[in-house]
Length: 270
Image (tube, rainbow, N blue to C red; front, top):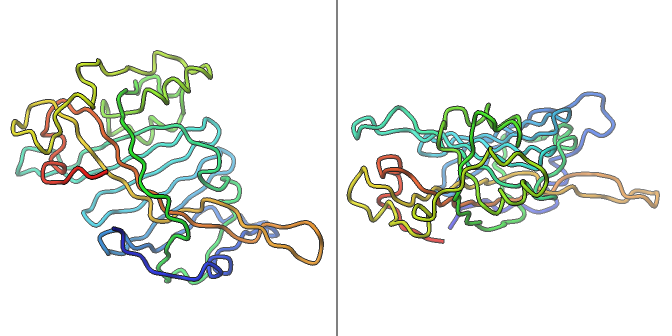
């Protein structure tokens, strides 16, 4: 489904190295990757080891700007998509979507390691060593932006354009509540508005009717694991990274189809 370039695994160990013995911190990285539509784009990866976050940003072939932020301190990951609107169909210049989920241990390399990562041969188009498939998430709750700092201080900054379109999952809400996060941050959608009980937007004729929308984001390349090598001594040392790709499909409630025009001609594939 996704077009890729094939490269030897050993290449990544050579091309990407950790600045372990340098006082200079490599906080930013630009990587060329091939999107699923065959187009090449530039990913910008940034790390802040003090705030303990990693940010990945790229532009899709249709002009959509995708931002992915991992907050390691609060174990929260944030997806934002700025989708270009269709003014001739009554939409604004762009529409912002934000999806928030629990960040599992080991999904990415630590922010400190990412901050020390540098790249040789920046003009080479990268492909991931491990393809993690597509995860489907039913976003059946919303986040109150005004007090979202209780969950992560980065939500308000990343998702400010999304306003009321900031979604999460009930299972993530339960996880955070069990760990003492303020419950008033979340609002679970009424059962009558549950995504599973709604007609899909791509089969809804009325543009002002509520429906179940679907949006897909694919992270084509990100550092997901550290690699260790053995030297003359017995203790292994960090010598590179393993790269991964992963897709996400978000299913969520929208108050009217007009906010989900990209989905009307799509095929609802898992």
